Image (cartoon, rainbow, N blue to C red; front, side, top):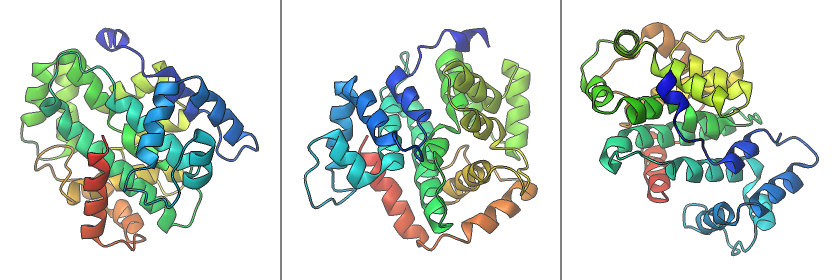
Length: 265
């Protein structure tokens, strides 16, 4: 993983947002202070907050107002989306990174909706969905064309694709993503989601890990695949389907929401 070590770090202010608990009494003040230290990131969040996607009646003119109208979790998700979309591509074209970005945004939107459908406050649901495939981006930027070839191969299962990654590069994209997440000081719960999103997640495990996996699978089913024409293992798909049943939003509406979110970046 030596090459992964040489990747530039993500915007440190976006990473700082991850460790602020949305349930803290001082969350709003902490978020506001972080955004005040990064005017560029704050300006982008305000631009997106005023887009048609959120349909806010009042114009959002400052971060404090954005936090009050959108909430801490949604504002955090927007900021992290901006940071990830700005990440240096090291010479790779937008076309190369677009499949990763499409699948990640789709998984994030679905994870967020799933959290709402379960009527539970699930911190970091959107961000977990957005970052679950971070290792694919890392491998693409460090390994280049050999990893592009790996993504284009046909596999009978995701497990087979991970076996090929381990054989070719020495580790899987899940392991690469967890390594980057730890290096960039993500919260342990996010590192766990990234590492286990293709494993069999037991019912007693953290709800965020189960939601992330279910959202990843549903993103593929809606036409935003992680890999082209790669079936999901039954032992992973069955528990995911149980979570997906909680969603009341019709697939076509969910797909439209994902498409609209993509236009924001």
